[in-house]
Length: 124
Image (cartoon, rainbow, N blue to C red):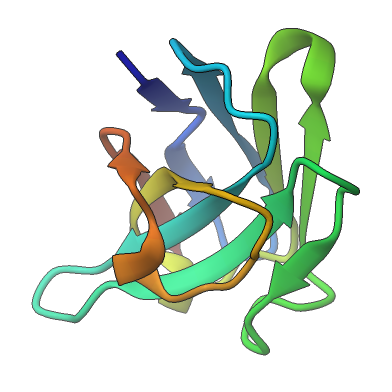
């Protein structure tokens, strides 16, 4: 059974940093992508970033590019999202998800497995 465990959320002041972790287990896919998505109360879920297992290619949405960095520790089957220069607009529940296959992308319906969320709150 595929399991994705997101952690690392918390309360931080604007301009601060947090590092989210997504620990993946229970699968043997050769190629996959791990994505981060977020959803604020009353808003639609939006993509944040993703990384491919095949070559570590990373993708970001414009609103976080230059502030967030996604990277993986394959030995630990864990993907991290380093979030710097946080803004109140980044406040959301952050979810990690796994998409089976070589293709990357930030279209949520293409992701096959989802973890529980972790709350990130950025105060002004």
